[in-house]
Length: 481
Image (cartoon, rainbow, N blue to C red):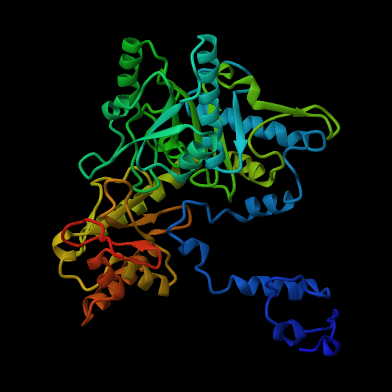
């Protein structure tokens, strides 16, 4: 439309009677003229209209529901920058209180009034901080011993979250992975120790593996590592990546020792915006004692009106999520968190049982230890099926559900699985609706006369739409030119 003919909207202009509704959304240039807030709001809102509703997104671990008071509180704090402690000193106090609460949930032995910890944008930054602290402690000790510091490494299972790959690349620290198998689906302590040497900065067990939902046995690792350190003279520590389990285990399995009760666990990271029940992004990292947090990780500035010291990769960050976390601690209390996590677990177990009864599928694990699980096609069923789990994902998405299909990590790439994450907001009734849609989708797929494109590609081991397929019978990748 010619710019000269363009009518500038005013307060009387109807949103859907405005000229903007006849224009394409801006793609590469800022619009020439301003518009009313109502029209701008509607245009942005319409961009998200075709998406899956957040509560039906069962692929994400991230919190998609908070009550209206939590949402109101966070919205009112959207303009507050956490780092500006001079202007917003009470936010810093609430941050310290949250760190104290989590440190005590994780059985910290530290007696200081304020426990050693830091807020992060998400569990990824929290993992980075835990890893950097371990690296700096190792580096300082090696320098004191007059030994080289150019070949650090850390050990983790092959089911690592991508942040650990980033950590390895960005800080040039070798990542040594312990492959998982269907027989050994979690980190094997003895296999982990085989990869350790004098350059190992830490071992990283995971509580709530992203790929499978399972927990590494940190107590068994700690026991084996204690014997290993005594034998070798090393002092290799443990950093627990508890992005999911850190907010599940304290409430539902407090007897399980995975935290600071164990000798070699020196730091723990978790995600406040997952089962901490806060909108993204929020993460936390806590150290067993302040002496394990290197002083060089704290940076100070004075240009905000006072001397402000901060531990973190980010400087400016939103305060709203911190207020949201503190609100949830006050609002729910221990029993409230326990009730929500219990319900999420029970709904997950119910769905796990129902899917396990379906003819085409088998569950990856016999039990559900976090509110998520994965399943795959029975091999004998998959041989003759004309469809794949990727087709099932597409069918469910047509009904509004986002249920991801993907291949497992190193050494298990031939296994395609689907995963469900049950967060606050997913009820038994909604789960029955999901199961109904899942059964209907399977019934429809089983009536196919010809194989789907993804099934044909899977038989060849080709790449289709970013997915890697393997030979159905051999499980070996198809190499084509």
